[in-house]
Image (cartoon, helix red, strand yellow):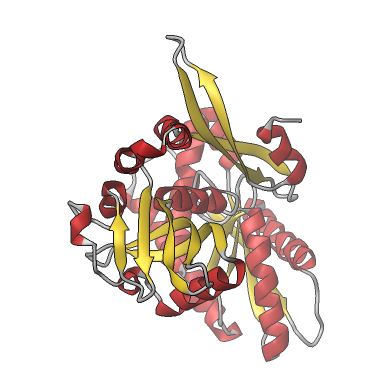
Amino acid sequence: EDCIVEKTFRSSDPCAKDIMIRLEDGVEAWFDIFTYPIADDAGHVSHVIEYLQNITHRKRADEMLRKSEERYKRIVELTLDGIFKVNADGNFTLMNRAGAGIFGYETPEEMIGRSALEYWRDPKDRDVYREELKSRKSVSSYPMRARKKNGEPMELESSSRIIEDESGNFLGIEGVLRDVTDRKRMEEELRSLSLKDELTGLYNRRGFMALAAQELKMADRLKRGIFILYADLDGLKTINDTLGHKEGDRALKETAVILKDTFRNSDIIARIGGDEFVIIPIGTAGDNLEVITSRLQKNIDLQNETIGRNYKLALSVGIAYYDPEHPSSIDELLIMADALMYEQKRNKREP
């Protein structure tokens, strides 16, 4: 019940936990453990990414703060988190060395007297933060979209509280800052992994279904039809059986490059199966389809001429049309396009 990996599998939610681990040399170390779910095409959690951050220094600093208030100043300078105070005017009156480093300064003294407002990417966010503090008196792990002194964006979390006098008059804010830019970037990368095909970098089936659903809603609202192209890489099984799966993977990656070169960045391109690709060319009219398919074949021919190998890349393509006047589901469109694609494949085989 205490295992957050199991908890993530059960709940499908990211989890976090502090844990003490005894290292090989017998030294006790504290770690932050974070878990993030990776879902399969059906939306079920199939994998859990787990990563750890050594927070021993922070834990020791917290323990020392609890044990000895006299050593407060030294601990403030030792902690890896930023510790700050701002007065009622919003100017810094205290910043430790770690906090100064977070904002790109060499010494804490460089920040004293500066307005905290200049480090928010959007001043409106600061106003929301202060209002929440005034109503709740304190916040924990509050997200802040901040920037360094050179303007570089970063993501912070702050646990802070209101400072008031005995009459309840607002004197300022004090708290702790933590730079979570790398963690946020990692979480975003993990999130994108659940929508992207690892081999080709295209969208996977889950990513395609999510984006296609949005396009169908847009088509219904604008009363505008859309096309779905279903493409199959011919002969992939033969390539795998005769030349090996490494060469098969190479053929798939080359096909992905061809599709990227043929279609626009705004178009939806996905690999939804072993040798199956789907494309939604956004805003394409029917009279442009011939131009697109011709450009696709031209790019395939160019790739075959440029890269020497024992086989030639070839795609079979089926095209389905979504008519908002006669709606159909994404699955129905894929079945229709798939059938047309196999018809073209059969025609290629006929003498």
